[in-house]
Length: 239
Image (cartoon, rainbow, N blue to C red; front, side):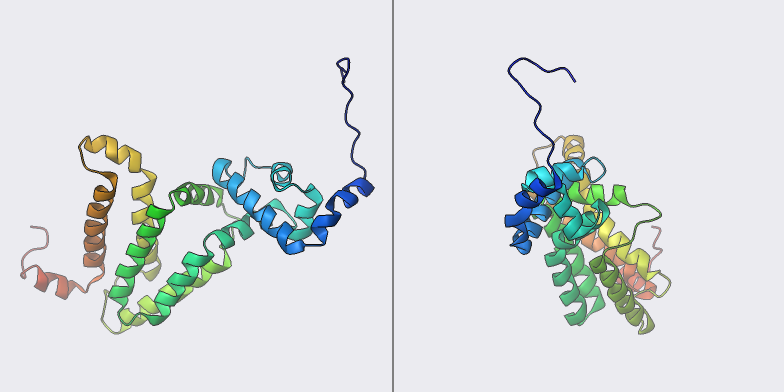
């Protein structure tokens, strides 16, 4: 390797020197874990998990790469842990709504609004979610929170379908996927939408207009057909 005068290559770290460097971190494993998760979250959000190396995460966290393997095992496991932590507060709030809401229609409405407001107030989440969806492949396993929410939501919808409270001809999984997709698609294409409208509407006001109509469109689709027809005056729904 060419050497410039006055400069010398740094010696490679030996296992003993790495152990000495990591010793303070090992004495406070929780602090180390938080530092790694913070660093990984920032880098994963900025450039995606595929483009982020463990060496970059370790450097940003101020530790050696061996501590990542010690705490998380692999980059895939680190990525899963970052996702779990990132959405833990939202998932817990959504779980509480599923368990406490008296009406499934009100649950769907509140869930739609809550997810919309979450993305609206955490704009970085749209980028983070984009990487999450892009990283999913045939070998992807949903996070524990994600899987639990789907199971609870599907069970709740099926219960309401059996009671005739919402349409029984709709697949519960698709209802939930639609609920997730409507707010996400809005914020994913937010700038393009503002450019297309080419008006003086403030982004906040435009968000509120979309939220209002999105909720109405979504809920109209999950009401029993006879209720929707009655509310429309009994006329042809195509007219």
